[in-house]
Image 1 (cartoon, rainbow, N blue to C red):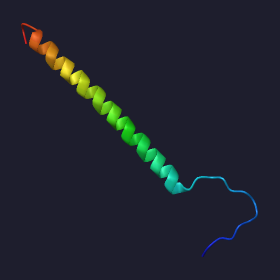
Image 2 (cartoon, helix red, strand yellow):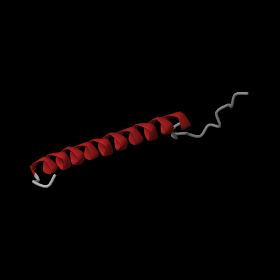
Image 3 (spheres, helix red, strand yellow):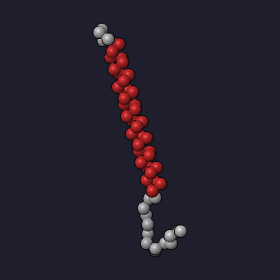
Image 4 (spheres, rainbow, N blue to C red):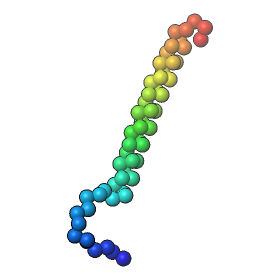
Length: 54
């Protein structure tokens, strides 16, 4: 059943919008973390190649 307006202003965001915002933030955090790990891994490999003992 639908709900009728109470006459009071309702400026809250819906649950779907909050879920989308959280999903975007999680995806951004994963992308930043993945990039940081990839950069660290590539610098570790480069450092290992220059090391005489491997």
